[in-house]
Amino acid sequence: MGVFKVWNPIDANTTEVWTYAIVEKDMPEDLKRRLADSVQRTFGPAGFWESDDNDNMETASQNGKKYQSRDSDLLSNLGFGKDVYGDAVYPGVVGKSAIGETSYRGFYRAYQAHVSSSNWAEFEDASSTWHTELTKTTDR
Image (cartoon, rainbow, N blue to C red; front, side):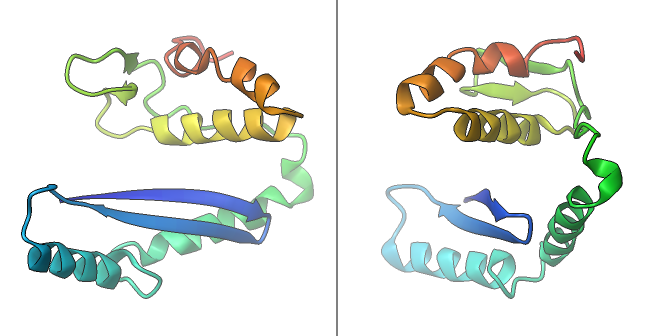
């Protein structure tokens, strides 16, 4: 079983989180239901495994509104330069470091493309080089 989460910032004070439990297609239905219940108990709104993540996201959102951060770039370069595209086993961009921020860089790259595009064609054009941007090895 795997867990996949989508964090969607609505505004500086609100983030929508979708949590998906990923199971084998041919699993018995009762086992799928029990695993889904387990994910809800641990990763849901009252979950205890990631409850500190809410605090981290809240603090990051609050800090983003401060005067000092208005002229600062978001620094998310943990594991930078170790991401690869076209891995033999996994699709997409894969972070090869033990700890990294590959998903953050990908999320904010896509978010920037969404908010700066005025239509789908513009967004698709801005998204055409996503893997090159995420796997570059120089910071700027």
